[in-house]
Amino acid sequence: TSGHVFACDADPRRLSELPARARRARASAIVEVAGAEPPGSLAGKADAVLVDAPCSGVGSLRREPDLRWRLSEERIRELPALQLEILRRASRFVRPGGRLVYATCSPLRLEDEKVVERFLAVEPEFAPAPLASTLDEPVARQVDEGGFMRVWPDLHGGGAFFAALLFRSPA
Image 1 (cartoon, rainbow, N blue to C red):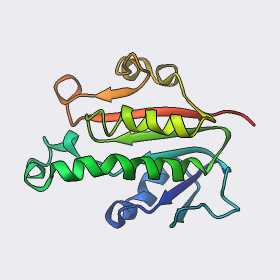
Image 2 (spheres, one colour; image 1 turned 135 degrees about the vertical axis):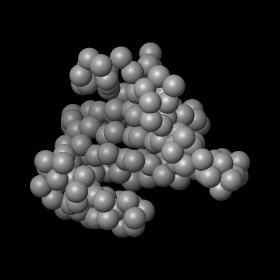
Image 3 (cartoon, rainbow, N blue to C red; image 1 turned 90 degrees about the horizontal axis):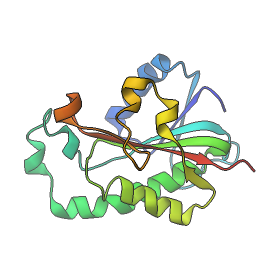
């Protein structure tokens, strides 16, 4: 459904920011969904779905230095399974020919490329998309050789960020 924002099991604090973000993105409606399966009327309907995955937040250490005291190795090891499950769940909303964006504020490959690789291994109707060709030139230079976008504090300011664009094959 073009212009709709689907929010699945989101952090309540961040979910409260969704209406303003959706307006800035010119999205016309917000659909909140809880549970493992999209309602039948929403499955396979979205042109694009963004998964802003819960992550270690290592990329935001510059902004939240106290995170280093709250983060554990155990939590970091647990996150990829959760991230993969959320990505798989969100993929059910994407229509054939639609796009799925997976993003984290982590530079850790186990939360980024490894999750995407595991997703592609179990969801063969999705394939990586040439992300650089969809972006403006200054941003396109941040896309690495694997087709993923990575933003680094030392190169771009701010925090570390990862994004992958995946297309669902047309019917």
